[in-house]
Length: 240
Figure 1 (cartoon, rainbow, N blue to C red):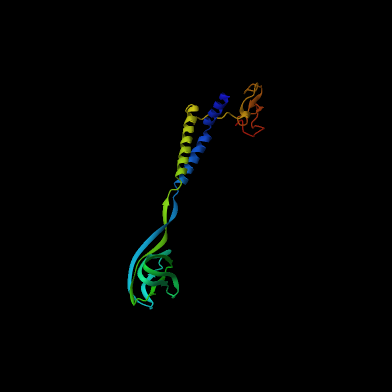
Figure 2: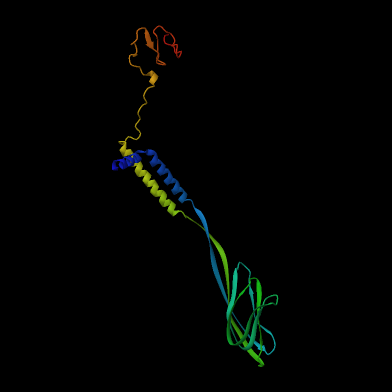
């Protein structure tokens, strides 16, 4: 059983085609692994701006406290957040079409807020006192945050594993080629001339001159009469 296994291993190492095949496959895998490939990734960038607004407002009179414009250049998302300071006031936000975007409700002291907005539009913070006070002071400390996304392109080698596998296969092919050469006695390219054609080899009892009155044609090797000028089989000239 073990002799049979060693026989197959020895026959495998003696097969030169196997080593050449592995070397070629390894080279192909390495070349494919080194082909550059362009990749991309989406990067999110945050932009923050701060604004402070302050206004004195009268009782029962709507007043615009602050006016904010959100540009539309490559911004994917925008948000306004902050804190309103005031006593006995009601606050709401209008867009450029005078539609209420968000109603922040009543404020007594301070109130935090956060809401999303669309880019390329203007937002106005409106307030009006609901108490009987003649005048009150309103201030807003806010943060405007915008995010934009852009695609970053880069070139990299994604087939490092393929290069590694190809290198291993290439090394195995080289080792098998060396072992195969040693098994053949370090003569992998020794030339052995082929044997002559069978029709030119003399048969037993038919050596040249063995039959009286006959000779062998030097062209086709057949026996012909000794007085022939041309070979009756191939037509070659015998005598001149």
